[in-house]
Every structure is written in C-alpha cells, then in structure tokens.
Image (cartoon, rainbow, N blue to C red; front, side, top):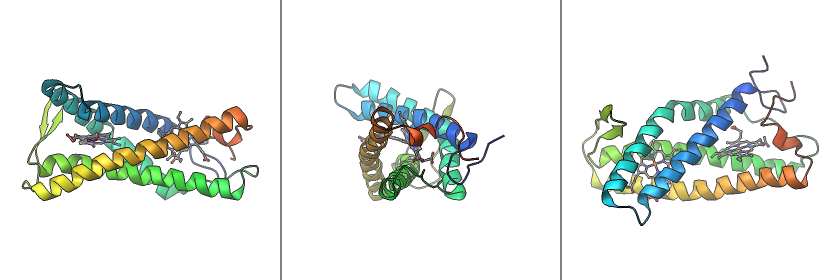
Length: 184
Ligand code: HEM
Ligand code: HEM
C-alpha cells in the first residue's frame, strides 16, 4: 500500500495530507488577509470572517491530523545528493511551518471566544464560547494570529521557492518525493 513513510521518503498518507493541507492553509491565509485588508467594507468583512471561520472549522481536524502525523511518524532522512546542511535547513523550515500552523489553529478560535463572540459556521449556526470574555487575552491571541500569519507567509514562500528552485535548477529528486512514494 505504501501508505506510511519510508526511512528516506514519504508514503501516500503524507503526500495526500501535504497537498490537501497546502490548499487549505493557503486558502485560509488568502481569505484572512483579504478580510482584514483595506478596501473591504464592514459588511464584506463580516461575511468574509464567517467564510474564514467556516472553512477553518471544516479543515480543522484534517490540519491537526497532518501536524500530529508528522511528529508521530518523524521526518524522513534526506537523499544522498541533498547535502547535510541543505537537509537540516529544509527540515527546520518544515517544522517551523508545522509549529506556525499550530499557533494559527490555537489562536484563531480562542481569539474569537475570548472576545466574547461565537464562531460562525456557514449558515448552519454558531459555536458558542465556553469561556468568559477576556479583552487582554483576546488582544494577545489576535496579535499571535496576525503575526503567525506573517511568519507563515514568509516561511511558506521560502519553502515553495526552494521546491521550485530544486525542480528548475536541480534534478528535482527531493521535490519528487511529494508526488509519489519513494524509498520503500
Ligand atoms: C492554518 C489556519 C489559519 C490560517 C492560515 C489563518 C490565517 C489568517 C490570516 C492571515 C488572518 C489575517 C490576520 C491579520 O492580518 O489581521 C486571519 C484572521 C482571522 N482568523 Fe484566521 N487563520 C487560520 C485559522 C483560523 C481559525 C481556526 C479560526 C477560528 C475558527 C480563525 C479565525 C480568524 C479570525 C476571527 C480572524 C480575524 C481577526 C481580526 O479581525 O483581526 N482563523 N487568519
Ligand atoms: C507549490 C507549493 C508546494 C510545493 C511544490 C511543496 C513541495 C514540498 C516538497 C517537495 C516537500 C518534501 C521535501 C523534503 O522532504 O525535503 C514538502 C514538504 C513539506 N511541505 Fe510543502 N510544498 C508546497 C506547499 C506547501 C505549503 C503551502 C505548506 C504549508 C503551509 C507546506 C508544508 C510542508 C511541510 C510541513 C513539509 C514536511 C513534510 C510534511 O509534514 O508534509 N508545503 N513540500
């Protein structure tokens, strides 16, 4: 089945989770950025926040599955032609992405709840806050979510550029690891 990872490659589970998560996280980032940007009316912003939280709740368990799976399964070793330093940098970038996404998943819902609001979920309804409102915590979590979004943008850009560089200028062996199982 080649479902699980091999010592030096990914299995279908990691590959599937990687691409589903890449789409979900990039989408959440764009909606989040759009709704808090200038040129959006108050009504549009309220609607977009609802879209953002609805999509986020839908993919919430999927994203956590991916993060926990990587920490449980470990990170495959690099390929012989990758070089030790390049492998260490790539692995650090990957774990930074996972930790930053965790911060987004924790700070997102908590910032809403500590503002005393409920989390909007499509037209189905709202997920009420289990906590009492706390302005100080709300502000702290809002800042964490905003700064986390900025860090995510930079690190994801580095990650995607490195993958693109590998495909265009290198032999693309490492990049190929995310298209089909290897090393089994
Ligand atoms: C990986 C997951 C997520 C990503 C990448 C993401 C991304 C973003 C970004 C880029 C912003 C704009 C920040 C700013 O410039 O002020 C934002 C705002 C926001 N996010 Fe998320 N988010 C994620 C998860 C969540 C979750 C799970 C929730 C709640 C269920 C949530 C609720 C919100 C809310 C309410 C805002 C608006 C905050 C404000 O009005 O300043 N987010 N998000
Ligand atoms: C066009 C976009 C993307 C490409 C071409 C790409 C490519 C790759 C490749 C080739 C690997 C394996 C590298 C290795 O093991 O050395 C990888 C791993 C990884 N990528 Fe991406 N990626 C993309 C988008 C993203 C995005 C948007 C995120 C998260 C925001 C992300 C997060 C990760 C993480 C955390 C890993 C480590 C393995 C795992 O846990 O899945 N990638 N990516």
